[in-house]
Image (cartoon, rainbow, N blue to C red; front, side, top):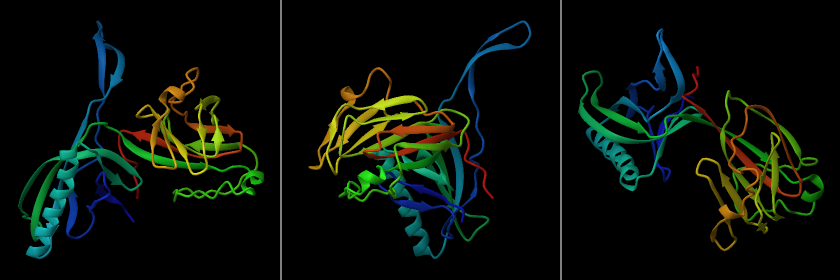
Length: 277
């Protein structure tokens, strides 16, 4: 089933394909690159391409009884405005693609097409790319798994199963390099992962139940301790090979000691969401 919804920073959702709040005007597949250039006698010389923010204008039909329409309109405003006031980004999802955004303008008028009201929304996307997340997980080896190291106290969303050795081949379905988030789970000392020939290492001790998060987009390395403390490990990263280097596309080999588990989310970025049937 097609997915089109706004999900706030704290997880509240406005479904834009349900009867009460259904989008019927708007396009998310229009984009434009800016460019730096110099004029030539014939044409121009392009030095590079850049992108600023993206905005979309969509119209939503709000339908139902008077009470249902009031509830839907109030609910949308509460969800949209909370993110704006807190300067946090929501996500506009189109099937398996999302773009981080805020609703910065709204106009409501009686609908000439539907029984109800029309709400025209302006969507501001500071980072102008749609993201398709690709999740991968890497378990400790079968021998280590028998020792019980997979019994994490937290409810991680990844399904860990033992694999032989510390080498896996993954496929990144994209045409460019991608940002990522990596979660490294304890116990492990100075964890190191090689992805596509590049080494990602953090010099620290991670106990059972603790984990390190490397985020290439925010350029952060943090550890979540068992007592709830969050520790900044930015200065503990390997500085000889950047732990923030983007991951290349295509077939990629991932290797590590096999003595610890980690997960990898790769953010495939596109100027428009994937076309779906």
